[in-house]
Length: 137
Image (cartoon, rainbow, N blue to C red; front, top):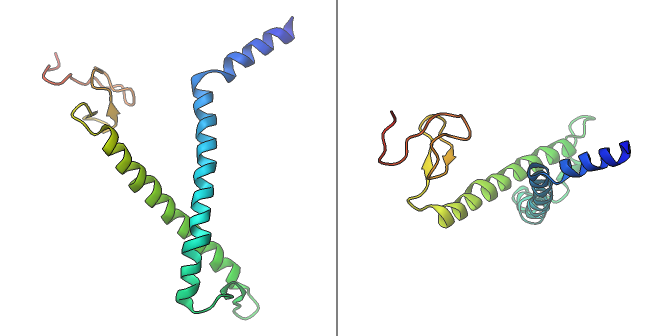
């Protein structure tokens, strides 16, 4: 009896929209991570090695310190951050503007988040937002 109740509660939890949204975000995030890693490993880092005129720069040392792996990790992080920035903010942002950038788009005047065209309250900050052409009382 108790096991059935726990199973029912788990099913209700697992099938909620927020959990499914989270699972989708993790899967899509993993796929984007693989795309970014492929771009960095296949394009950015070889270009960097070409500019340095050396392909074994990961073996650099300074006294007894192996600075090559540290520099490699730093460059890898910076390159991945740059590719993520370009891919997410510029690429996806342009796609969103192209798809839904019509006159229906509104932003909250208080928190600047996007709100539904028919909303009277911002779902992000809770502020009362007037409909277009209708003043607040």
